[in-house]
Image (cartoon, rainbow, N blue to C red; front, side, top):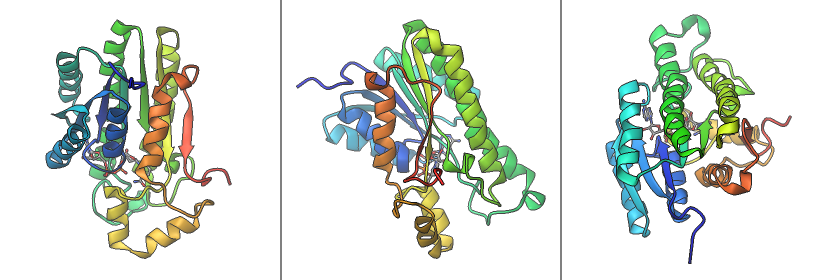
Length: 260
Ligand code: NAD
């Protein structure tokens, strides 16, 4: 039976775990060939590819640090060399509010290296991905891109300065890209996930303070954490022709968190 993404090629950054891992699998379940990418967690990336192949899909792992231009250029080149084209990109790689596993800090105590690292991966990383993905999609005169921001962009929390700045910046970057590509057949949107279960970010936050999970749920009107599948289904829908007239959209997927 034909699938809606038969013959299509999707690229997923941050595909080694959490939201990216599940979204890569959902793209493949709809027939897309998938390039799964991540930087350090190679085992996780290869595991995503294995799961896709076991389910009858097609995928290739490519290592890429999204903060390095040469890596990102090579990633898109490898995608085109392997599968001939690039139809969909999910620019999802990112690091958490603390930049790494250190306590959250107010601006006055935020180490410069955490600021730099967070902006380099979460914001510059998406800029670099857009740059090389759009170059390829312009040749094809079509494509759809989804970036991953966070509800933190609309509901800033003290102690998250670099993260909030990076994710807020992504919304402006997405809208700029959407306008630049609007008459070229390329759509660019951004999702704003709420707190999402089964991700490293959630593991890091809750292993330090187990009470955090209950606190987070109490802030969500629907009284549950998001699941990676909630994000994956929205990303795949945004890439599909069902969303053919949607570009520049910042879409919260947060159980109502940003509505109040
Ligand atoms: P995760 O930590 O499980 O996944 C992050 C992925 O990004 C991993 O595959 C990791 O290897 C990869 N990555 C990190 N640095 C990279 C780099 N320099 N180059 C390439 N890949 C890199 O967490 P997740 O929650 O699935 O994160 C996915 C996205 O969702 C992130 O952008 C995160 O900010 C965003 N987000 C997550 C939540 C949540 O509650 N988990 C909420 C809002 C937004």
